[in-house]
Length: 128
Image (cartoon, rainbow, N blue to C red):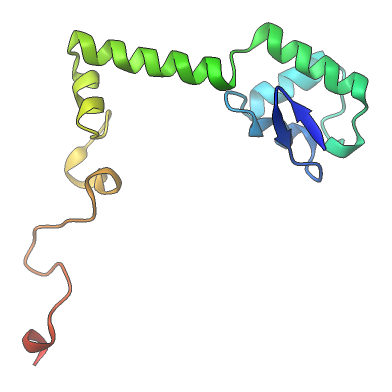
């Protein structure tokens, strides 16, 4: 069971993809980390030695903001936007989409409520 920064990464996946289970590390960051640690990206997570895992963990701790620290920073940024009253802050506060067209593309956040004649389920009395 491989653990990096307190996160259990899946053992049967290649380490390139397994590192992306850590919040704040994507595929490109994962590739850079493995390159600087001199670890083969095609190795499975269970095949890594303790030395290789330690190298990877040291690089992440030194160069990247991940997990709790990153979540806290993002939360503080959103809170700051709300406090100063920016457009993005107001959209966050109202739980609406921050970017883009909200009339049609915010169904996930606003619920699947459509106000047109043909929408919704017809009752049995209307069908006949």
